[in-house]
Length: 226
Ligand SMILES: [Zn+2]
Image: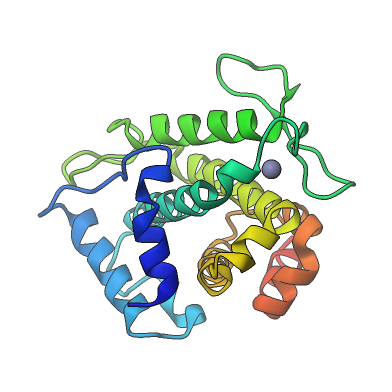
């Protein structure tokens, strides 16, 4: 057990919310185990993210979206005490980028301090993945037509959490010894979203250098496909 895992395990209480789990016996559950086992085997990320032969793409997206949500939630939980209204009065990605919040009830985008934005973001994603009409937990319920678009939106928003954490809160990540863990999670995320074209090229602009270093040539794939 690595130090980082011990650390994260000890800090479980700092995550915002309980982890979403798929019911055992559902198709999603076995796919989830498959994804986890492959990760442990230390496979190359470019192979790891590919849709396994004969599997349903929506299922593959669903297990990854839920898994990335849980992992990003855990990462933000580790640094959330450093992300305050005072330290981060804006939800920014460096000096050049600011993100505004909007959802189904607040359609006009508003500027929010980062912790409030994060709270809305995690609540919003949680409401989606806990809604069985949008994220079916058994294989007898079909995925909605807008499922790929919904996954894109969720992943685009999770990407903003990575951006904010990398640019504004990387020091505590390093001093807590979580750097390798965060890098590995971000790498897996980037390989997955680039494999299926789920986040736009322009969304990577604030972190382009880091992303290119960790995942050479991956974001270029989004540009080539534009
Ligand atoms: Zn912050």
